[in-house]
Image (tube, rainbow, N blue to C red; front, side, top):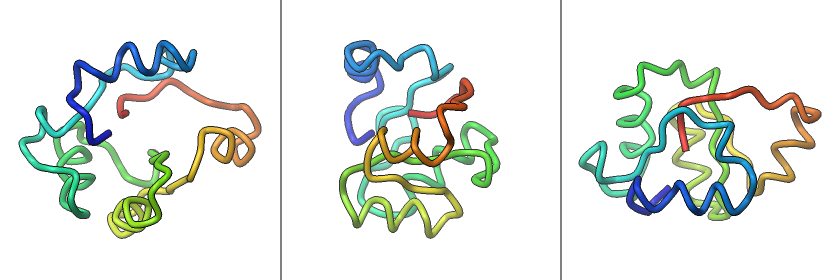
Length: 95
């Protein structure tokens, strides 16, 4: 998210998906703005996550392009993600 990490919890709870995330990330935790591929790369590095095992959900085409450029699978909506994985969501570390 481009928002601060502490803002994400109520947002994800409101969507009913907070339980899927172990740790929430925002620019405040990786000391970089969400302004290019370096943002997603910083999150991956900080979390020691293999990009092949993570996804990004963002409604912005450019942001999805940045995520894809560092090896992440990117989706435009939660519905698109759930359709792709067939409802087999596993708990992860990133938001």
